[in-house]
Each structure stands twice: as C-alpha cells, then as structure tokens.
Amino acid sequence: MSKSITRADLEALDRADPVRAFRNRFTLPEGVIYLDGNSLGAMPSATPNRVTEVVEAEWGRDLIRSWNIHGWIDIQKRIGAKIGRLIGAEEGETIVADSTSVNLFKMLSAALELRPDRRVIISERSNFPTDLYIAEGLIRQLKLGHGLRLVEADDIDGTIGDDVAVVMLTHVNYRTGRMHDMQRITELAHARGAIMLWDLAHSAGAVPVNVTSANVDFAVGCGYKYLNGGPGAPAFLYVARRHQAGITPVLSGWLGHASPFTFEPSYRPGEGIERLAVGAPPILSLTALEVGVDLMLEASIDALRTKSVAQTSVFDALVEQEIGHDVLSLVTPSAPEMRGSQLCYSYGDAWPVMRALIDRGVIGDFRAPDILRFGFTPLYVGFAELWDAVAILKNILADGTWDRPEYHARAKVT
Ligand SMILES: *Cc1c(COP(=O)(O)O)cnc(C)c1O
Image 1 (cartoon, rainbow, N blue to C red):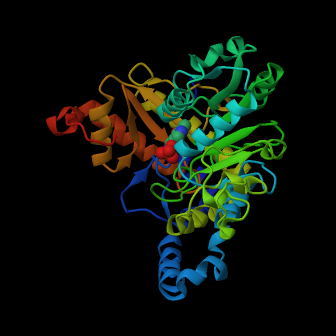
Image 2: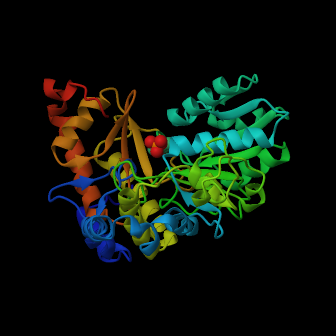
C-alpha cells in the first residue's frame, strides 16, 4: 500500500508552487476555503479601486467624453482581444459582449444561416441547460423545422450525419467536469459538413485551449467564472475570421453597425468581429472584467493547468484516503487529461452536506440532483487548504451534523 498523504506533504507542495504568489492578488475572507471559483471567481484585490476610479474620474468627471478619451467605445474589442490570447484566437476574432446565453443565440443563428439546407442542432443531453434552452427558443422563432438532437457524451461521433447544421458542445461539462477532445470533435463535425460551436464557460482561464489549432468555427464563454470578472460579468464570443464576412447578425444592434454614429436608417454590419456587438456596453462591469483578465494573462495557463491537475489529483486521493469512494463516488473522469478543473461526487444527501460544509467555511456547490461539486482555481487556492477541506468534509459526514433540519431547507440559488 502506498504511503498515506499528510498535511505536511501538501504544505511542501505549497512551498514549491510557482504560482502561489497570485493568491495575494485576491481578496478572500479569513477562514474561507473557496472551491467555487468555477461558479463565481474570487475578487481581485485591484478591482474595487479600479472600478471606483472609472466611476469617479471617468463617469463622474469626464462624463460622456469618456467614450472617446477613455476608450470606452473600444473596450469590447480590447478585452475581447485579451481573452482571445487565453484561448488561442487571433487578433480581431473575439469580442466581449452580452451574456453567454445571448452570445449562444447569436452564434447558433449565424451557424444555421451558414448551413441553410440542414435542420439539426446536435448537443449533449447533459449540457448546461441555458445552451439547450436558447437552441429551443431559436428553433421556435425560426419555424423552419429545425430540431435539437440531444445525445450522450459517448454517442456524439455516431450522430453527426449530413443533416447536422451545427454541433454545439460545452468543452468542460459544468456538472461532471468531463472534458471533450476539442480538436477531434471539431474535425469530425467538419468532415460531416457541420459548423462547430464550443462553449468555453468552464475552459477559458481553466485549461489550455487553442481555437486556432483546433480550427474551431465559433465559441462563446463566460466572464464571471475562471476569469474573475465579477458577478454577472459580460461574456465573450469568438468567430474564426473565415466566417466573419458571411455573418449577418440576427441581433443587428446599432453598435454592430458599420457606422453607428452616422445613424443610418438601415443596418449595415460592421467590418469584422465588431458586427457581433449589439448595444451600449456595460462599462463598469467591463472594467471589473478587465482586471480579472489582466491578472489571468500574467499567469501562464500551462503552469495553472499543471497545478490544477495536481490539485484535482491530490484532492481525490485525499477523498479516497479519508472518506472512501464507496461513500463519495467520483462522477468526474479519473484520468486528469479527461477533465477540467473541478471534481464532482455523487452523494444521496448532497444538498444538506454542502450546506453544512459551507457553514464550516468550505465553499463548493451543489448541483441537482445529488452532486457535490468542487472547483479548483490555482490562481488563489493552495494545497494545504485542500487537506483542511477534506478533513472538514470527513467530519461532517462522520458526526452527522449535515442532517440538522436547517441544512435541509432549500435556497433559491444553489
Ligand atoms: C455558466 C454557464 C453559462 C452562463 O450563461 P450566462 O448567460 O452568462 O448566465 C452558459 N453555459 C455554460 C456551459 C455555463 O457553464
């Protein structure tokens, strides 16, 4: 039997951790072990001052002149380009706009227009629901007889026939953490003549992604998870340059117009990726997002991935050692190359257990029906904390505190 893992082992990993210093660039409350940065990233310490500066000096003092003098009008492309570097896009292929849901609508409708003779959208049954709901809404609106074909993760290959217009998948599954082979599935979609749309909500800033080498057509992603952009932060989208001229945006708003300030009565799409902008961008939210993205760009995604793999591996080894996989069964693939930066365990009473855990300062989340989900954000989570988190979880399960009535009460947001 292999030697058991001790807290001292994890302290040694912390001392040797090359990205450890980033922890000091975040503000986290004392006594909290935050394993939920995959749902809402932590706050960079620089964010409050930067947002205050924009409120006071730009909005408060320079007022509407700020659109020009502080570059507000270019902010969507500027931050978009920065996120583009995180996902391997080229300059001018990414923009920050709207929410992930809205961007999915824009990208799906563009994909269907590019494949007018095909009627099927393929996605995964266990995809994040908003992705599926948006597809349903678009299909209803179009009334052209499109259908959404939902398949299991392992059955995707066999279901991409020549009736498929677009394959819409989330790269890292929000619930299970399973990661698809982006390159392989994109190739497959292309071989069958379909457009490939990836949702990178759990990938951007979490795992290395290269949309250029994978030859991806469209992608969308989230600003408030691993990019630490703040609650409800704007999302991003990517359109490969080869497709840009062929897209006439369905949400043809004035800021996607070729010349917004000539106020023409009829829409003409903007030059490149800017045609996917819609209305006036939320400058305060974008300001916060840019702080998070800048911080992420300072770190190397490869170093973060190395640490993330080490963290998920050691956390799961501790769960096995201290609690046992017979009690908490791992839903996430056990091979690190098959998963993103999270681990999920199924447990019958997952909801009250997670409430009890949060009460003890270990914040993860619950995903219906029975999943305990833990996100690992190497920028600000250390190794020794993982030891403490598992020790607290073990305690809660052993002493039955999770079964107290107050932990069973459901909240609106889980
Ligand atoms: C978090 C998440 C979203 C969020 O969509 P919003 O419209 O930005 O709230 C969408 N898709 C996936 C896969 C997600 O994980």
